[in-house]
Amino acid sequence: MFTLNRAFGEQRLGYQDIIDSDLPYVSVLIPMHNEEKVAENVLNALLNTDYPKDRIEIIPIDDNSTDRTREILEDYSSKYPHLIKPLYRGSYLPRGKPSALNDALKVAEGEIIIVFDADYIPPKGIIRDLAVSFLDPEVGVVPLNISKNLLTRLFDLERIGGYQVDQQARYNLKLIPQFGGTVGGFRKELILKLGGFNPKILAEDTELTIKAYINGVKVCYTNRAECYEEAPETWEVRAKQIRRWSRGHNQVMFRYLLPLIKSPYLSLREKVDGVFLLCVYLISPLFLIGLVDSIVLFFLGEMQILGSSFFIFLSAYNTFGNFAPFYKIGLGALLDGATYRIFLLPLLLFNFFFNMWYSSLGFFDSVLDLITRRDPVWHKTERFRNGGDVNCCS
Amino acid sequence: MLLITLIFLLFLLFPFLPSIKEYLNPRDILPLPIDFNYSRNPRYFSESFKRKLHETIKIEDVLKALDGTGILDFHGEDIKIYHIDSIPSEMELNKIIYMLGDLKTGENVTIKGNVFSQGKVVLENNSEIGEKGKIKSAIGKKGIHIKGKVKVYGYMMTEGEGKVN
Image (tube, rainbow over all chains, first blue to last red):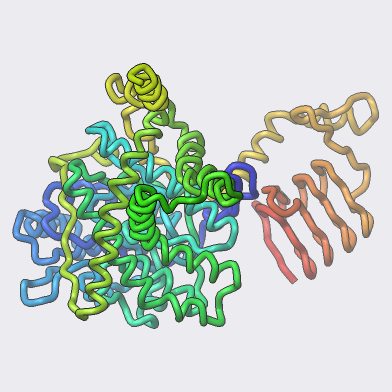
């Protein structure tokens, strides 16, 4: 449905093309923990912004780094004291992105808060695009280092399908486009009203999206605001990332599924989409259990579906349901003007099993979190860039 | 049995051949291009429309069309030439409107094309310019005056005074 909508449906337009005055004061927050490899790139790119310099402040948040991050921030702060205002968090404070953002919100003066992960490289016009949207915009992204190996190239394909098709279609259909967390913005007033970011939730972006909708606030997706992000270059790092995403997402699912269904502010279609969105990482363990169950039943001779109408239903679902991500990625690649990389699409089959396994582990982590009431520990995704300038912002 | 197994494996491998080829001999590995110096101009569409009109339509051609000795063409689409300074109430037009002087609409007028006036544009109550899902411009070089409930699906631009009441 999303693929068809993106291909043939009416696309919702943002306000970026028609508003050029009354730009709001914007605070750009960049949480950083040991980001010496990427800190200069993101700061250089932000200094290049076309947003009026008297309407913006940049707050890099050094979250108790042990590398050269603090030194880099001090250097930039001394060069641009009115623009770059770092926030240094000591070791006595709880670490993690949500806590860092909460502290930065206390000092941020902007009416609009824009958050970039440190590995993102924002283009010149992106602050204006996000600020003008003024709600809770999402950003289309493309990985930076896709040429490195098979993993980064497959990651690139997943991102193309996710942003170019899935998120834009959700926005077109007035469903629930998700705040990605890595690049996006929100009203400061809104996040303060919602009680800030919860440090006990690993997917603070998903939580913000769902809390906003439950409280009657919409998310606006901005497909044309795009920038590079760094993709994990080793399977081990990617596995940890997926497991963390799944664990955080499921934490949000356990906490907000019922409030979302009961919320008086959501339309029926938003509720249905919200339930699907919240349960997306639940599919992996269900599928895994189903797979194991099917194999066991098959060898026990209990699989009596061949020849029945159920088999036809299953085949139809398999064709149009399970392959939906492949359709999305195919269309996304077409819309993005990608060429031969689409030939890698069949290899995503193996990625699917990899993702399924680590998403399932993340789900079981979240179940344990729920049962034992333990607090999750924040693990930062390892960076692979070697520092220095990147072509975009040198 | 061995032959069947080999044929089965061959068919299983077949969908992956393009992938393996692209993996071993990558032809599309660079990040998708992003113009990092791109800075959005919110007036792009209206400026572009105005520029195209100026480039395409010369005043002498307009004058020829007005005296009946010529016809204007704008990228294959006829441009309507009006000898009047107002569009009557309830009228629906599906063309681009180009006015040498002022343009005044009556009430309940619908214009589905772009509107460009060298003078002022006055839009009366319940007028509509453009249609849902299509970006159109309403440009009154010397001013735009909106009276009552007016819908414009797109952009309004003036170098003069913009007035709403």
